[in-house]
Every structure is written in structure tokens, then in C-alpha cells.
Length: 507
Image 1: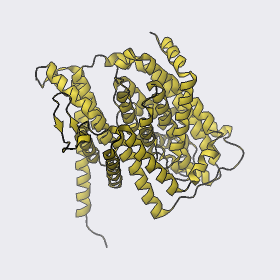
Image 2: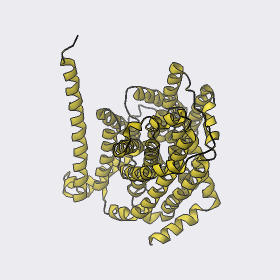
Image 3: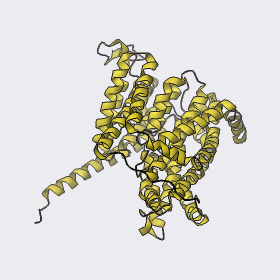
Image 4: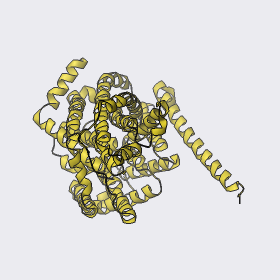
């Protein structure tokens, strides 16, 4: 089946009224979740998962994808109007976006953000359409040893690259792997780490971990921040003109560069939209003829990172669909949804479920158009969500968290677990331990264990099977490089701390 036939199949499914409706709902919910500080796509998708059991998997994942890239649109609203990023990927937008808002140019900042997001999201979707099949055909060569090495690389990369202290990221991975071992072993039937609790025999549901770490944990962090500093006053949207032709012209090249950086970085496990936005901002400042204006309201400082984070969000879908390897917390949740719906993630998805894959890709084109229509004329309405009393908003989120985890298994234990993971998420956030590696390791842990066992079964217990197969060996070398970089970073930081302590005190 050629590319045009695949696209025709995808659009024939994505353009049904049910799927267009779910795409619209996902885009709308994603924008709202992005606007709300601290409540991002991970929490939103986690909360919606329990109520999608009865939905068609294609419709559900179209909605989840809309939430994912919709949050990238909405996150810029709070960065520009409140100087508080709704999402980590919009942190860098605060620098110039808020400065533009204070100068009375909020409309221009919001417009360049929405246009850049549409431009980058559309180009990134076209790139995904072109590269998905070649990558899937290459990945069909993978056997259990390659999949084990690939999952090990994903966890190592996410652990090493998503934390300021890489050792903390790797430690989070270890916690996730331990949690993945709770329950009955699929091959031997042995119950592990259940401590005599019947509800733990089936293991811990990934929805409980995701909602606890990212929804309850973020609510606790936001509640503490509000109690200490109060609610941030927002700038109001003024003026008649959205964006001038000169501002649009100044933004075009940053859109292009941001799209290239974002898509390239988003397709790498562990990098993601946040890192991509920082890299694109740094590149734009370096190439600018007026770098002194960055941080003071340069429109390029909004255009490039906003294009990058949307391109990265689309790029992250590539290795999720093609390899079954998530590179962020949000795509990890979506991987869990695939498994929950009985879909086998990875290259075989393109041969066994082509209608599902191409409907998702086609829906991204539709979703980007919907988001542009929503975000330009209705941004003032979305901004009013920021005026909701924080106590009511976060109390509602906690109530939905408890209801969401209870309806999965109707187990009271899950409510206690979600609160426990929420407290864990709060302390992890406070002490710089990232939640994404933990969730990724938790979801991939069982798949990784099964791939490891199958590899040894195929080789009659010969451990060299991981090093004698070329693709597996190359991936393991990359893992070793990530580990070496993590160790070097740790030793360099320790040496710097020791040098600081031994430095003479100048009076």
C-alpha cells in the first residue's frame, strides 16, 4: 500500500463525524489543560483513561493526541499573560512573551504562538507521514534482543536527560522498575511484592501511578506555591490588531528553525518538547542580529520555541507509533492506553492495524487546523479560566482523581495508593526527582522483562545474544554512552562542589 493510499485510508476514518468530534474535544481539552498552570496533558489523559474503556480505540487515541499537542498551544497563554508556564514546554516563552504582554503586545505574542504552533505542527505531521513507513520497515528486523536493548536505551536516555541531576533521573527509573514487578509474574505465576494484599496480586494499575504523580502531586505543588506567593495577576489582552505583517515576517524564519530543531529533538527518547524549546531559543538568540532584545520582548523569542515544542510533540509520536517506545510521560500514558485497548505497539502496528495508525496521523492534520481556529479568536475566553478561584479548581481536580482511579477496579486501595503516589510526586518535585522516568520505567518494565526472558529462551540461556546481533550491539553501545555521560556529569558536579568548598574565603 503506497503513501497516498495510506493517507486516503487515514482521512476516510479521521473525517467521520465521530472522530472529528473526538479530535475537537481533544484539542479543546488540551488547550484548557495547557492554560491551567500545573495541570498538563499527562494528568488530563490519565483522568480520561478510565472513561474510555468503552470507546473505539481509534477515537480515544485521536482525542488523546489532540490533548497532547493542544496543551502545547494552551501552555503559551499562561506564559504570556501570567508569566507562569502552563506546561514545562512553555517555560522559555515566559521570557519574551510576558515582556511583550507588559508592553501591550499580548495579542501579537499570542498570535505568533498560535501561528507558529500550527505551522510547526503541520510540517511535523507531514514529516511523520513520510518517515513512518521506512522506520517501521526497518524496525521489523527487530527481535526480542533488539526490543530489550531499545527499551533499555529509552529508559536510560530519559533518566539521564530529563533531570538536572541525571543520577536522580536514573534513580527514578529504578523505582519505576520495582513498581512494575509488583503482582503476579506472567511466566511462573509467582506473586511478587504483594505483601498478602489481594488487590496487589494483579499489580498496580499504571493509571493510579500516573494520576498520583502528575495530577495529585502537581496540585500539592501548586497549592503550596499559591499559599506562599498568592495568585499571580494576569495581563489583559488589549488592542485591535493581532499581528502586523512585519512581525509575521520576523517570525517566519524562527518558525522554520524551531520546527527543524523541535522535530529532530522530539524524535529522540528522553529529549522532548521542553528541551527542544530551550535549544531553539538559544539558537535563535545566537543567530539574531539584535540578541540584546531577547528577554525584553523579541517576537522571535516566542515564535521559535513555540514552533519547536509543537514539532517535538508530533515527533514524539513517531517512536511511539513505530517502535512502541515513549519518550515522555505523556506518550508513556498513551502507550499504556494502547496496551489497555489490546493493541500491540511497535512496527507490527502498521501491518496489523494500518487503519488505526493512519487515522491517528490524519487526525493530526485536522487537529492543527482546529487548534488554530480555536486559539486565535477564542484566546480571550480561555484566558478567563485563569480567573477561577484556585481552591475550587484544585479541589475539583482532586475529586476527579479519586473517582478516576476508583472506577478502574472499584478498589478502595487504589484511592489510598493514588494519594500515596501524589505525596511521592510532591516530594520528588520538591527535591528535583523527575516523574517521567519513573512512569516510563513502570510501563516498560514488564515489556522489558518479557523481552529479556524471550531473548534468553531463544539463545538457550546464552547472554552473548545481546552483543552478537549488530542492531542490539549498536543500541547497547548508545546505552553505554548515556551511562558514561551520566557518570561524567556526576563526577564533574562533585568536583565543582569540592572546589567550591576548598576555595579561599575573600573578606
